[in-house]
Length: 489
Image 1 (cartoon, rainbow, N blue to C red):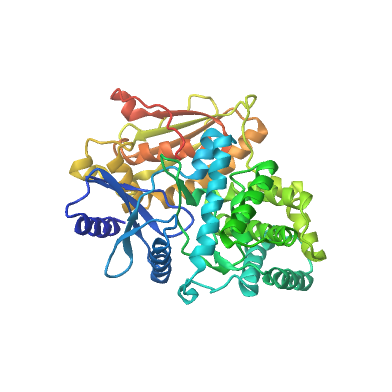
Image 2: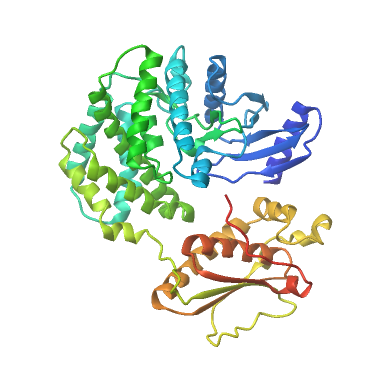
């Protein structure tokens, strides 16, 4: 990671004429791209590293094309010679999803969603004009082949993981029928492909701007609307979904200058809602069940409940009986509960005590009377305490955290620990156990063990809502205050 930081910082310095005042590593999402925020000259810019050069090139081309049409996307400020690093305009830290989660289903937020859909219609229709679709990353068009790919993605990475029987040939036949039905749409423009509220940034003046459109292609505009309105994490109420769909169709007709057959538009919209929900389930299955990333596993129940709501209230307008039978299996209570983590409530007696300690003083004793628990040795992780600038810092200082996250195997180490500890915590909650100890040790009890203990505490708090007691033994002996860390945004 250090070589990436150095390379993107060098690009910033070349562009700005001076080094940045400070650099933040931004959280990684579902892709392999890495993002940085540079502070300098009274403003911030976003630095991006992407090893997939064709993906970068699609982003550069789309951005240049859309900027010429004054659409709501960032300006590309500079690009490295190898095309792997680039700087772009920073729209701030608040996404539309952040705004919704912070303030709820208010009239103001409804207007932000409606404003976003208007900007989307402009991007789709005006952005389509003169666009060279041969520059797309994958398919030029979201047609039958791409629809089938999304359905098969769902089949292989989610449905088959359920290990429930179904008629494979009949299901493929239904996939073919649905793909043919959705391919024959009279409306085809630029399709964003991943249009959801976390990819919509809201500035202080309530203007909205889009990021992460590099996967775009030509396709039905209803797909993007479905992606936004049926995003599981946003959980929009039916009144919002219905009202915003009408708003979008009004915007669409205004920009095209043509009336639409709204019954046909809605019918095909429903088909794309289903395709999008299943594509997301496939992605969650791949990232969660196969790559073992916990945040995607915990999103699966939300997506399944979203699917259940769709099946209860919407119609596809086409008969696909085996497909319908398979979808009914997916939304059974048993399946949803399989992916829903057990969580503590006010009656749960379990208290998880998480400690960091120094091996020089020895492993902490369990005074609960139960014994057992876990002891994890962090000494296999590179020690930031051997670097002069971090000797007096702790596992809560930014330099130390950046070092552990970017230059060591701490993330992989912790993911394995989460998998192990989760099993015990879930069972202890179910069985009414009262105590579990988890200890992290390193040489001085100052850097690696502190960081790891904080990370596990945050993970257990978010996933299981369990009572926690966090204690950094070595640091408390030095009178260092240790409040429970807050959830990361």
